[in-house]
Image (cartoon, rainbow, N blue to C red; front, side):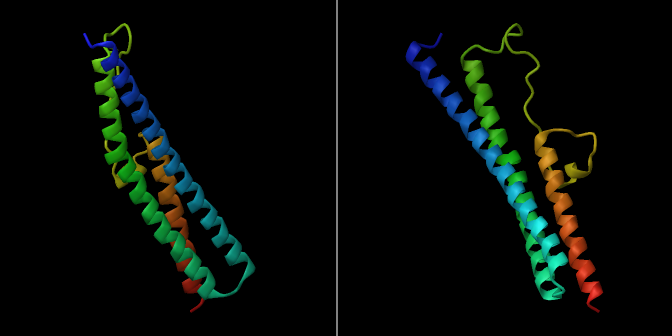
Amino acid sequence: MASEAETTSIRQAMDEAWRDHQHTRDQTWKALQIEFALAVAVVGAAWQTQSTVVVTGAALLVFVVSLCCIQISLRHRNRVELTKFRHILNCEEALGLHPPELISDVKMPQPMTFGDAFHWRKANSAVFILRMHVAIMFFALFILIWRLIGSI
């Protein structure tokens, strides 16, 4: 059995891991919000100006930002989140919280790939965020192609 000091240290480590996880998830949501705001700006630019250069540049920016956001989402899930959950699970086990009567059916999150955005049976917030990034990326690509073809 762990001493009181060890138990306190384990609880603090677990609490910090949960805070890190929440901070990472907040960053992921903020990236999606910024990306969405940029996509709305592209729509506004396309509506307000006839300049192919401005709209194409804005759509290209959103496309690149979408790629970066996809990379952020994948990294947050596959590196940060999985590491934090392993750490939390180890802390819970050290505190004796895994007998069936306390916490049962605990599963680790699964790694995520770009292809998960197209597997409609997968449903969790990380995959939802990835899908939104991919949708915005395709939207930006559509605007980009639409403006380039329209200027020919």
